[in-house]
Length: 64
Image (spheres, rainbow, N blue to C red):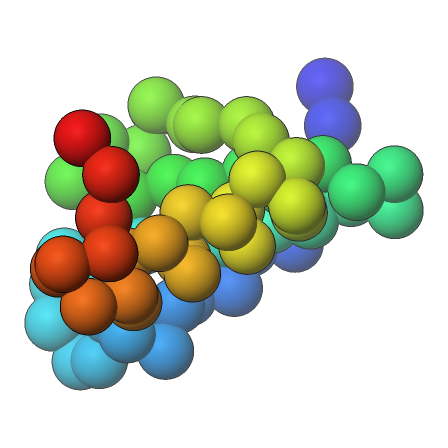
């Protein structure tokens, strides 16, 4: 079983509902959430970047 070096998202602040991120040398990104620690989402750096860019965009630019 692979061990990840988890980092708490800076957007989580001091709350108990935190998002954690771990990246591998191959570019795989793992996302976890403190309320459901057994659920881990896996994606790529490029796809995560695209998601964050889309979420930060003004609402009028989001596609349906």
